[in-house]
Image (cartoon, rainbow, N blue to C red; front, side, top):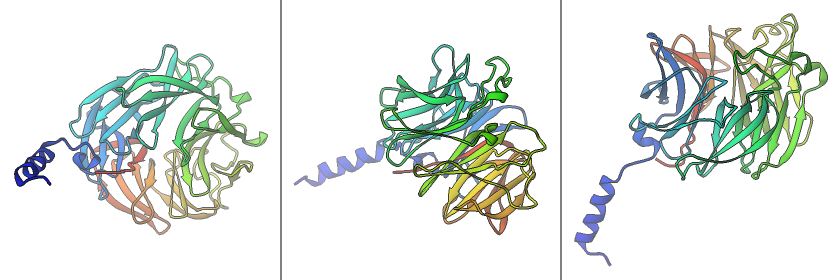
Length: 358
């Protein structure tokens, strides 16, 4: 049995050990990138009340971030086509690694950690032709690149970790000019939703019906029985098309048309998607609306707010949404409630932190 002196030494040692979990970074619920009034860019941690608990400068505009499941680290990705991913210690604000894609590759704005936090997966494209890749980085080895997989599509955007350890990839189907992002193949797009196993093998690849081939699959939300996805229409602006889709089991992709009278509210552009409590939220900064649906794609509510885009699940019920005017909102089918407003312009995505410890 340890004597009192040994026990006290152990307690003192434990007290001075650095706390690596998210509690040491202010216990944020979400992270998001934003532009300040002076034109500078930062990544911010946001708590449940909408307060900012940390801010870390970024060299350029960010898009989305990947939050480590238990260490207070986030990887902030540049707006696509991106050439950097910053690994940030959110306790100190230090950039502990700067990730760069291989030569003739670009990051495509999103990434995800494995459930144990040992690996980081990144959405990437080959610069010429926009063929999709999933980059693999060993976190414990200092975020060393250790391999890559085919994404089995053109122009992958968001990817998400599945409960079984596999990856679901939104292959948007758009080939872009690496110099100026000009879209090169709108007349021959083939977006798909690809599911990869833990070794990168293709489990399934599902495409939209031919009449929706110009509906780029962009963003993802995990559902209890499948995957929800948000789309961005690349065809004629005068066409009313579904922007919400759901993939369940091995069934064909299902697209859900807007409610009567809401066909043009999103102006063909869904910017983000989130799911919680049997509901799915879809946002459109172009349309200035957020739509909330039930788990089967049925319309529950349309909420109006200029430049609203970031969306994530909120503890308790409903969603947290952000807008370009610096506001953070609580949202449910009954409406929007202001949580906080900051002198910032939030970028497109609000990323929920899944805190396993601390």
